[in-house]
Image (cartoon, rainbow, N blue to C red):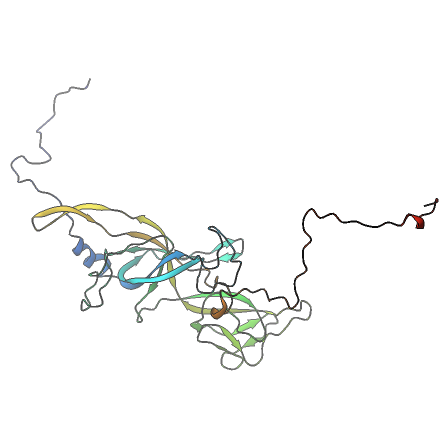
Length: 309
């Protein structure tokens, strides 16, 4: 039975006598109240696959030379600075095939536009922001404390700077090696401008049993930066009324970002010879190859073979 009598007084959801209204978001006020009003400045670097040294699309190895200007197989170019609010920043530790992975993810409440340096400090008045997974984001405010602590084990290498997973900003405590010997910064080693460890006095040395450098542990702080992991909200269109015109307007992105947890994944080599082959030239002429299909005659003297043979 679908037709039933109504019960009680019936009130319409929209009053027939009330004036008709259209809802409209004030996107500028949303930016001032949420993203730019509460946020920090981020420097946005757009990612692009690096073709340097590749012979074919999809190559995983570069055959001729060493590419040292890319990271993660990408070339990064600065696009602009925007002000966004970071929320739900957490940290996790996972066990991967190469060891412990220590990612940290967060979410950004974004504006629609970059900051215009000529706008007198008013945020979100520049060009429109376009994000893609893989883009890099750096905190752009020098007064913001974005350092995080981590720890790792390093194998001592003699004669060169020992490179940690992240560039060291501040070392926490002392270095302890596999023999429980402690090393003091400024006495036994120093931290370079690139954030590496440079040994100058006592050092862990070489293990005579393995012939390799001894293992030592460090705890340090580094400056965090982030990658765009996914775009939870990408293309969002809504109708807004500006003046006497009502039309579509694109709303800001809602990205999920992940903090970098494997920093030194660049190819090693000199930037001056990245396109020079690493194979040394021959000092002598290469042996000439025999042509395919050539008949080779091998002489055999039958007089040297006896009956018993």
